[in-house]
Image: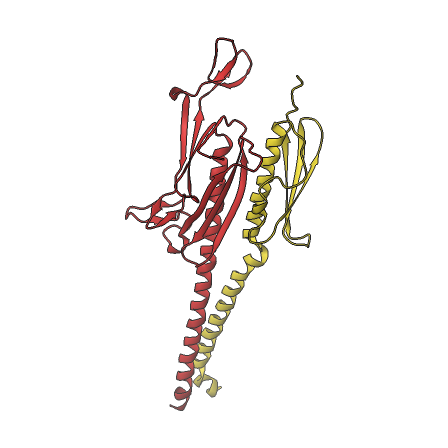
Length: 202
Length: 128
């Protein structure tokens, strides 16, 4: 019985320390995964916005708060112009014969919105998906709780030189799982076909 | 021989402990591997978006037919994020297609940088 008197406490001690280390590793893993989810989320949202903005014809920005804006992008119908041989918008001529662009309801091809939603006091990620049980989850991590993120800043502004066709975007997202983990991205997008930009008072 | 036969239960225990310890070490190493392979991924992401900002400003200038300067054209506040970034631009080529190379670095050492290249359309100003 002597060997058990020595081995059993040792065994218990060893199992305890092993469990301790495993929990530590699991927590590190969880933090690392939520950091990764935050980074991927910010990248995905930013890429979607810049991708959609590139082809925008008409842009309207509404300010929820100073830091969070709503974005509306309108695309217009394009048509091939036989006389001039290139793709053109629906145009019309005024009485002097000069061309001007028409923005009428019938021309609108598609409208795209980027609207941050306020839930329980935080702006949830633009990527969040609502499940059957009415909870919002992050598609990157599926149903796992460590992927939850929120939007701190989603702001659009014109660059300093007031060029009409460049829009500057700022995005700051924060992880709801790892405290204080913030990712901030700033970029600008050139919109060659943009004709109208509303909602930014300079 | 008889002695070993008596201790074979403890030998089994040793094997189990060794397996556990190996699994633990492997977990730690597997965790560390992606970090060692791809360090500073967040900083790289921010740098890439800074390069895109510079590209957008350059494209806008090129579409208006203005000269393409080599300094950073975006908002200077964007350079101060997690670390301080430095943006260098090289424009090569003449005619309608210009090749623009943007290098974003965030330390004095050359290895901490990204380099991206893009061909942009330069529209000359119409002569009146």
